[in-house]
Image (cartoon, rainbow, N blue to C red; front, side, top):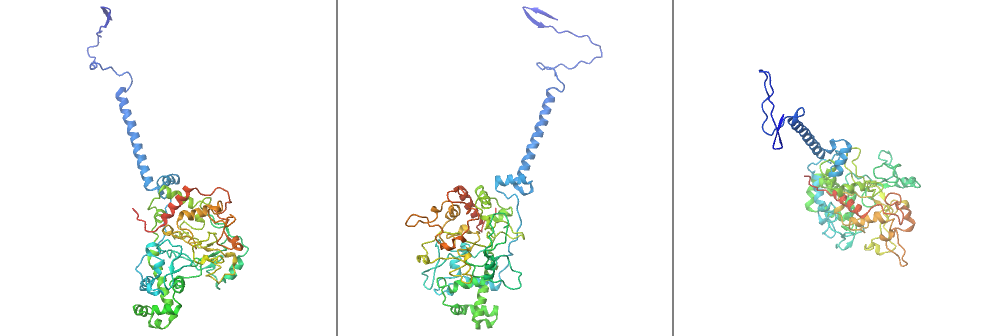
Length: 500
């Protein structure tokens, strides 16, 4: 019911007659409308809170899972772990490897350390083993000279850049062809080399085992492998005329017989050693070898890459990309020769396959020896190694060095022709595709490719392994950015990285 008052319709309450026992609901507050749906607004609010709690719980769970994945990518499924590796540089597949045991050095090794650092053992009295193999430079040269100065007056230029002495404790003796370590009769190098003639060399592909046994030289010390033990390697510089320059072994023995060494030699090797020149020299070189084997600084395995392998360090995006290019058989293919993976027996990678390669690096015209246009350093077949000089299929081949601590060096390849890693990488990238950027031109303007090896031996030069498998005019395997990233990775191979 309603009444109309001055044209305004006003609702008139109707009083319902009810049973005396009926309980009426309480009156609603002013302005409040009764619920029109089951549960009403209170129900919707409660549901909203439940949904928010569920969503919040899921967010927290996802955040916790993401945090766990970031901290332990190796515990996640491969797809997640590798996504974390791509994002953070963590190793999604860390490994365990065995480092050499660190123990107090023996008395013989301590004697070797003293001899290693003693300049009085040289003809000049100014040069020790440590002069060219500085402990603060990864036991390599402490300067950027292509070759070091030595000789009786420290004015003679060396023949080749001294290699680093680090990581030689696992270097195998020089051999040709498959490992013959179990043979009852030593294999003649000439016989092994002759047997390998005509056998196609295995192509080296990063991450893949060679399809055929290596039929090239491998192992040994020096650039041409002419020393087969650390003892013989230590003796070489002592009588080299442009290094420590002793006239002969007798002059070395005379210096070893100084008063400061006599008692130590007598106690360690017996008094008779002082009366046997050959034995005294042999024991002295043995002591230097023991120093290199026992002192952990020669094989620290303390690089950022080592810790990354173990899951204890993270690579930057540039370093990670560089590592992948290093291992990419279609790009840099560095790991084809410079092995980057932990060995099957759990030993850390040495970054060398210990084999020999003819790379055809350009001639270093600044070397004194190269002033003679008829002189050629041909590695395993001479001039400093003579026992397999007739095996001309190996002319121009030099030992593949380890890349550990390579970023600390300032002279690269057997002739020290390059002084930074950018030029080294440009050589690999452009040698075949743009040789005019690598080699000089003759008077007629023709590019003198492979100018540091006689033409009759140039067939020995590697043109099969990437990136050397490209032809002139083709696109190089790597961009400038790729090269920068590979160099960033190579710097992770320097020992002495501090783990957070």
